[in-house]
Length: 185
Image (tube, rainbow, N blue to C red; front, side):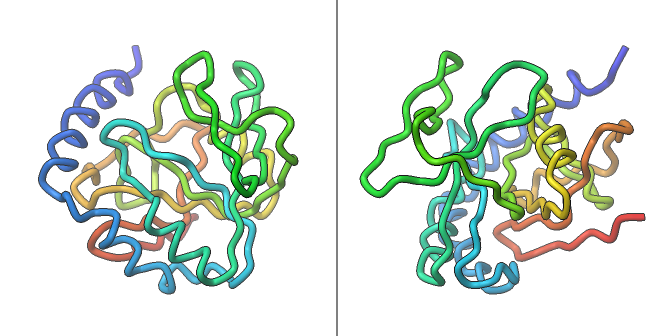
């Protein structure tokens, strides 16, 4: 039996505590936008935080000031990579059948190479504990040259997480304390 479901339960509880403990999180990570070394004008895969997820909203605003444009994920079907759609001026995300905000299917398809990724936990090797659907792992594996940047509270770091062959590690993580880069071997 996998230990990941147990770790997810622990990580959700920890993240809820961190969301209350770091109310200025969004502003603090926005201050690190330049340190992410995302080139001006880049197409960046983003997400809208739900519940107590680490909220990238102010980071996106800081990147937008540098000309970055954003694409948001849409679940096409189970066990498939995510589809990304370019944000539409004035367009509003819709709730999926799972209650997740996502772009309408008629928004323009986009192919970002830089991904801001939500997570439940990460470790010092850049292993990411996601929600269990494998959507980001499949998406990153299907995107040659993809750069995965986790968005997390610093306290979401765990000593070590199991990494399966299909798990795509992070290249970096941005927390309220700054940027951590991971060197993959």
